[in-house]
Length: 607
Image (cartoon, rainbow, N blue to C red; front, side, top):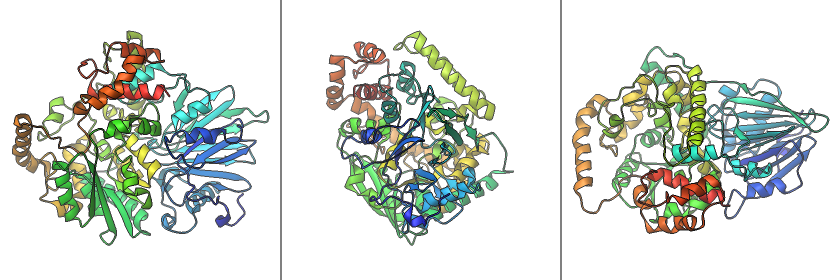
């Protein structure tokens, strides 16, 4: 039992909170695990802290979320990764007060047996609790595995970690690559759950409690994970308006709990509807700083400027160099870990330029398309390309279609097919009618854009409002048909879109108005944009990120890829691919994104 004043239960190291950890059930030498976590950062690695005892060894690194500093008392160690929003108490510690108040509140509620992981903590998190007296360790993951935890288990030794490469090194597995997973990553942009790019390292289960007991002979006994929530297919709402009300109340309540003690926040803004809904929900009395990062001022930037003005926000526009995404390749891929696409690290380096770590909360609108708009439901391909056509979902699924690619051997492709089929069958048991959609949603590690959050949470206090528990639970409890054509999203957040009523989306829609109005309004705008692009002279990229087709055809790409083409690679499957010249700009066997994945894999495996 913790029997000292909570103010005395934290370590007096400046902003030392939990960003990443490596835990080993076998005791390690002092400094060994810290060195591995330091390796996540190419420059200026953070100061680590270690804990050791008969229960094993633990190393942790800092983050930017306030209130979740690790707690150690006579009986327990408790660490929290991420910045969960607490629903059983206030969150004033995010602005002032004890730097361990959030961790202490979680530990005390858990200790007395009244903590409900599904309802009491919202958003991305991992909690690790070590019972030092009884030599028991519990690892608890969030609803969707927004923050993944990886596990290695061998002959009584168990290791957990939130960074896959650090864990691999801790277990001496960092050169034991799973070539099937590498091929899967190159082709599909993510590694099929529960695998990783390392042969004997796997992802823990989402929304689960994994229980580990250290025995008297210093070996360990690992229990099967206990799920506290699953996204089972259900019908909790009688109509779309009821679901929309629950969604709006949940998201706005999540935001209110975060901002109530604050006077200044930041948000990422774009030409889309998610960020303008966020801008509308954020209390207007706050000082709200908005940020967007672009190659140059384009359509995306001009619309975002109008939106920021409409909502009274202070906008800063950061401009990337032409080679930005090549320049950050090594640093970003190191930070996200192998098997996760580095190209979503959009804030990297801008976080220092704009001192984003100085904010107690930086908001984003990622995952709304995935969860709330049926983005990954089965539809005709042409509907995704011709934006103004009404959306409707198709029955059946195509996730288990045989993967065919001339680049990889048939035996590799067959194993990828088997893994994808197994994952699909697991989803189909929970969601028989929407298994095609949730194949890419559960867990969140299946979403190739998730490294955007992996980077952000390590650099500043990132809050993604559509990763809140209420958003997840509503998304799991409504039919796909309610999500399509932005019906659910618009019903929930229409009031917050009012100020930007007449500001178009980047694709020509007006998000305030229903889909059937935009069916008439959007086509001429969309056609004009397409004709301007196809008939224009010098083509200017109008999107928010980067034109990867142009970047893969650039001299910077040739320079970076030439080393691997000339020198080969120690991993056989990558070496075979490089011999075929598949990094060349004129190669047709791989798409631009697949070439980027291949180059990232080459860089990571060469370390």
